[in-house]
Length: 243
Ligand SMILES: Nc1ncnc2c1ncn2[C@@H]1O[C@H](COP(=O)(O)OP(=O)(O)OP(=O)(O)O)[C@@H](O)[C@H]1O
Ligand SMILES: [Mg+2]
Image (cartoon, rainbow, N blue to C red; front, side, top):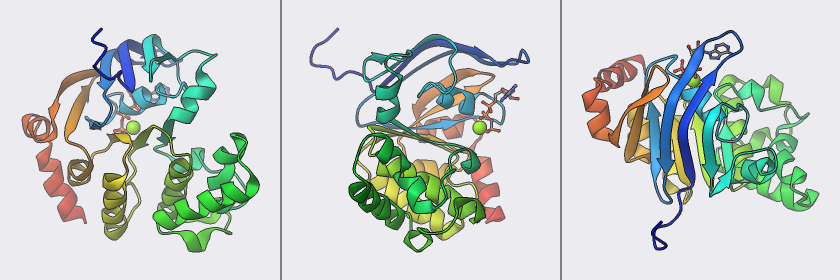
C-alpha cells in the first residue's frame, strides 16, 4: 500500500445481505469513501440503499467486509465505530426516544461520558444549527415529521463524528428547511454519504455518486454523469413540480 495515500474512511468489500424472510437485499457491494469526499447514494426504491448504510455502523451484519477508518467492523470495534459514523435514519421514529428533544440530542454525548453541562451546550448548538432551538423542551414523539427529522439530524451533528451518513434527510422537510440543511451540510468539514432521491439537494453537497440497482452498485462517478446516465434528472423535474 502507498504510505502517502490516506486510508479510506469507509471500505466495503463484497458485501451480501439477506433478510430473515429470504430477500436478498445486497448482492456483492464494493464501496470506498476517501477522506474529503462526499458521495450521493442513488438508485430506485428497494435497490438496497438503506440496507447498505445500516451496515456502516453494525446495525445489520452481512457477509463480506466492512472497515471504518481501518477498523474492521466486529463486536470489539463496534463502540469505536459508532462514534466515528453518525447515521441519520430514514425513519426518525427509530432515532428519538428520550422525554425531551434536548435530552435526545444530548443522549449520545452522555453515553460517551461527556458531562451533563457540556452535553447540553453541544446539544443546544446542534438544535440551533438545524433551526429548532425553540423545541428543546418538547417531547420528541409530539413533534411534526419535519421537526423530528431535524431533531434526529441534530443528535448526530452533536456527536461530531468523522463520517456523516444520511438516509433521506430531506423527507418531510419543507423547501426552506431543505435549502438550509443543504447549506449546513455543505459547510461541514466531515465526509458525507447521502442516500437521497433529491438530486438538486445531493448535487449541492456531493460531487460523486454511486447508483444502486438490485443490491449492487451498478455505476459510480461524478454526480452529473451518473444522474444523466440513469435518467435520474427526470425525477428532478418531478420533484420541482411537486414542490
Ligand atoms: N426488514 C426487511 N425484511 C425483509 N425484506 C426487507 C426488509 N427491509 C427491506 N427489505 C427488502 O430489501 C430490499 C432493499 O430494501 P432497502 O430498504 O434497502 O431499499 P432502498 O434502496 O433503501 O429503498 P427506498 O428508496 O425505498 O428507501 C427490498 O427488496 C426490500 O423489500
Ligand atoms: Mg431506503
